[in-house]
Length: 476
Ligand code: HEM
Figure: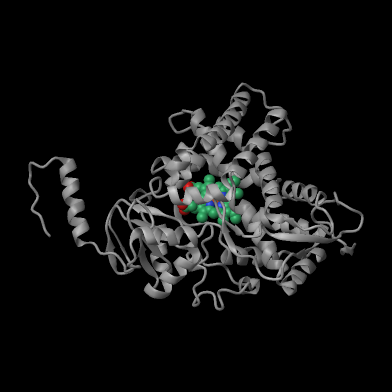
């Protein structure tokens, strides 16, 4: 319905009229007809099969109703995804559709800031993950992984995911706080572990999925656990600001952020610093991706043998790179990213109204038959000599909000896998592949990556440099 504009109308009223007219012109792609509550239940119980069913029935763009915040238009056509990732950043909002992350990361996290504040903050955080700051990270990652592997029992099944969580937490702790050992940092580590364990309790995960972020934000147990982490992190910030570096060389993220200044010369507030550091310390996707890499490799002995040969020969990392990319394709830890439109946008032949949530779907994009033949198979070979497509391989999202630690995470995955394969022989426990289960931040193997160590490299834990040619494994 067209409306005439009244010249005396206030700005607010004019905006309302404009968005009414906008909504009147707009259409949504088709989607399931079931009531929202039913769709929300399907989304909560088994989100990935739900997405696959919708795509089979409705195609590359469909509308689902799984949230109180209105419909989501799910997208898995590369052109549509490109349009979202390359849109003017100020035309997209993130904090509302990502509200589920706010209680954990904090509203002042770079991930939840709106433009233009987001870009300003991103520029402050980015250097910590690039250039000279990251030079020494590879050896650190290998050292942390090697120390972890020495603790693994031989011949006794154990879950790999928690062990990978321990590795990635230790790595990120050292990057955020520097090569510093102190009781106060041990406390931060212990409190972070408690917070992660609290969140990953299956009953609580179910409650968060059903009752939403509001329940989490109000829950006294969560508030206590998150509050303790924040207090301990801010304590560390204050100590660092007062000059108590405890041996920090100034290259750690905390030092970089504590010294960073906005263009007007203002430093980050304590609240901003706290939320930012907790965001980085909450790195969930890297440990789940590592758990998936081993889960897939151990169930494909030919691929595992090829990778181990490459590791032991010490020549290049082309196959390792392909294995990591294929793992992130097949088992992307973040299956969708979401944005709220601030302006109407043409997508999939529809003029989508401002206020609608659009969701570039990593999971469905990675399963496109035309881009990835036999998409359900674990085939690292598909990435050999073949660059990953900017808008078809999107485990780190895209555009100005692409994961700012993507190259760091890829490096970490490679160094950890390489170290583990050089130090121990692993076997999967249970014949079948593991299913997908939810964790607080990402999707994980449902048996948490159950494995057994069947052999160790001769001579026990190695301390030599990363480029040393590594001898074969001895069975025990
Ligand atoms: C395999 C590992 C990882 C995966 C798959 C991953 C995935 C993602 C994705 C999909 C996004 C975009 C979210 C969106 O568009 O809404 C993102 C953003 C982000 N990630 Fe990662 N991530 C990984 C590791 C890490 C690590 C190790 C860190 C830091 C220690 C990190 C820090 C961030 C931050 C700060 C953002 C927000 C960037 C911005 O908004 O400008 N990620 N990540």
